[in-house]
Image (cartoon, rainbow over all chains, first blue to last red; front, top):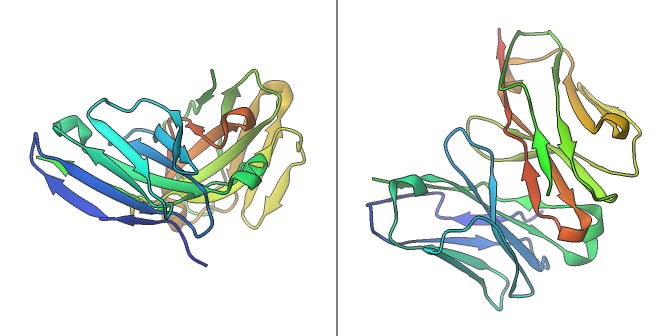
Length: 115
Length: 115
């Protein structure tokens, strides 16, 4: 079965550069979530989208932006990168009509290293 | 606000010993979901179990078992006859139906199984 696809899996950037992470949800899933996991930390919710509209927002820095496109894939854009942005970024997807089952599917993550 | 607490930061056992991971959660909502995820050194989040707030039936699945007690807001997880491959960080997580599937994670417990 198709899973959540994230790209790139690894990314190395310099301070003050920009990075873009992509997420392709499971086909027919209409909701996408982004999480950030710093070294030795638990995953923290950043932002979510339902039917291409932002549905919830967590602790996402103003330097970050995200959107969900017409094909339901999502991109997380990070500008003016800082050393503290080095983390594992997870994307997850779900289907709204099964939201009452709490079912959420995670990608394998994109590891960003800022030098 | 929701909160998940995993008091144990690290547990070290010898192979074949049992390991119990503690999880205590806080929420005012009556409809919620509890999860356990495993994160091996490779970094991906592996879904282990989901329980909804109306299902307190405890279960055994292979070497895994769960003990959900609403009275004490606890959702403990046990690995029986641990194996080296069980070495990972284990996260307990909570989601609220009213807030979609946004997950709140505990701080994680690192399990080290020595041969």
